[in-house]
Each structure stands twice: as C-alpha cells, then as structure tokens.
Image (cartoon, rainbow, N blue to C red; front, side, top):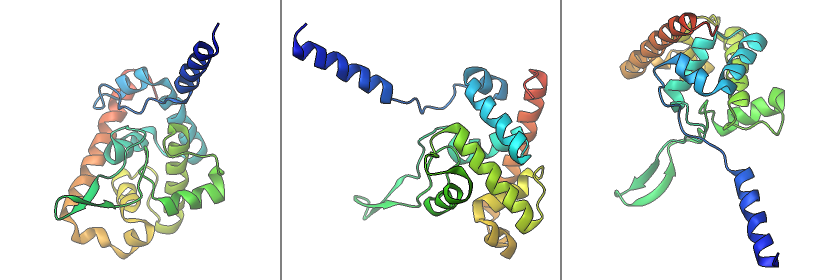
Length: 194
C-alpha cells in the first residue's frame, strides 16, 4: 500500500471517530419514539431521576423547550444593521442550554472538567443538579414542572424576585412546558418506558 493511500484511510477513520450526531429525534412530540430512537437518552433520563429525583417527563419537556433535543443547539447570531454579526444573545449551548458560568459552576461542584453540554448524560445530570438546588433555594418541588422551568429560565435569584411575573410570554411557555411534561408522562406510561 502506498503511503498516500494509508494516510487517506487513517484520515477517514479518525474523522469518523470524531463525528457526532446532533440532530433531533424524528418525532419530538412522541416520548416513546424519542426513547426508542435514542435508548441512550432514556438511560440518561433514568440516571438523572435516580440521582436527583427529577421526573423524566419534566427533564424531557424542558429539553424540548430549550433545545428541541438538538445536542449542539445555540442561540442564533445577532446582527447590527441587519448584516454585521455582533455575536450571540447568550452563551447557552447544548441539550440543556446551560450558560457558560452556570456550566462551569456545575463542573467545579459536581460534573468534573470533562462534562460536556452536548452529551445527553452530562446535560441531564446538570439539569438534575440545578433543579435540586432550585428546591433548596426556592422551595419549588421537583414535580412542579411549571415553576421549575420558570426558575430554570430566569435563574433561581430571578425566580425568587419574581422577574417572570412581568413576562406574559414566559408564563405562557411555562404552562406549555408543564402540559408537555404531562403529555410525555402519559406517553411513557403507555409504552411502558417509565
């Protein structure tokens, strides 16, 4: 074999090992389809539920709202004068849309430096960790999807100040997240995936 041919084969193998699939599941409105298509998601949801007590449907509904199950999701770029890129609206990234500072706090306190926001296991563990602290700091029960989402979106101190009360759009979305969690719960029960 020529050196060039061996180098090309090695390059293809290395490139194949480094690629990751970040696209959303085919039917994101169907919890049974999501976990059937991605059994690793169900393992991650169960681990977060076991470790932190966060119900699987709550995790799924918040991930749906935050990233639509797209592992490398980011907020869109913003533009000045419609053409000059000025950066992104926030540093949110991954399944959980965790901000840089909050993710670094999670890594320091619990997740470790190798934890990645685009890994479903790390992202759900982060969410469980964050929501467990929400219980401590706000008194919002883990099963209260609506208020857990509000605290997740606004931050715990923002939630305690009631910043969400002046945001009718956010209150509506929090209700939709709670409704989606109830829908996912019924679907998971029907396909025996709880």
